Length: 128
Length: 128
DNA sequence: CTAAACCTTGCCGCCGGTGTCAAGGCAAGC
DNA sequence: GCTTGCCTTGACACCGGCGGCAAGGTTTAG
Image 1 (cartoon, chains in turn green, blue, yellow, purple):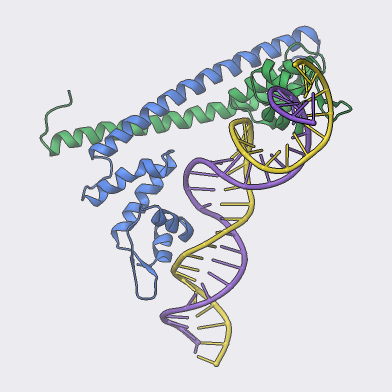
Image 2 (image 1 turned 90 degrees about the horizontal axis):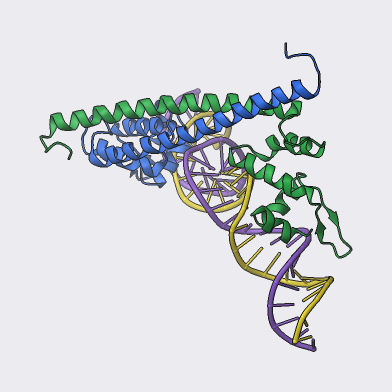
């Protein structure tokens, strides 16, 4: 399979696939004319990459998952290295959620106080 | 007050202050030698900018708050435009938190299943 | 007089995944 | 032979808030 077909089937662009290839996440042979040739299995790999990128992983995070797939596992997340990344990412997301919630609370309070202040100082009509 | 002093007092760098100035967030006159001269009040402005940046606002979001301070208000958040930004940002943070929580749940489930799968397939010792 | 400590503008780098364009090689149908 | 559509590498652009450096002018202390 050449890069255009893989891109169409995976629902992405050739530019993107070349980038993954360049960074060692895809496996490709070269035909005599220099064209990249991909196995069917790479479609699954691209799907894995895309879905992990979509949840906020970067390419380095994704490497173990790809390796896990190549090792013959049905999913990329059952290998020790993948599990380790999952743990780390989960922790990262947790702290990120905590921070965002703190920000949320601060914004909420600031908003509440600002509105209270406006109603107190300038006697405009109350919000509709 | 020159830029170095303002930077020291605000706990930031001259590079940063020039950046704010360049983007119209600070107000400065020029001395005869070309040096920027800042009023005392700009210290408060820099503080406002920094604290809003810290919670994830970008410079454009911050403009109304600065304008509000310049309009003579004790805090930058009591003016209508600032309140509008606060509302918008609060909504953004809310959806961001929701997305992150969804990701969190997905990661958690994936992790749980991956570990269950490992314990089922390869009979390694259970995690310590 | 000179060194040190300011100040100025301007430009490159970063981060990461991708869009996009350039300039060219190859394949296939007419 | 010519057009069309694939493929190749390489390189710039983006986003945003800076860091850092260069090359120069200014002021002040000693």
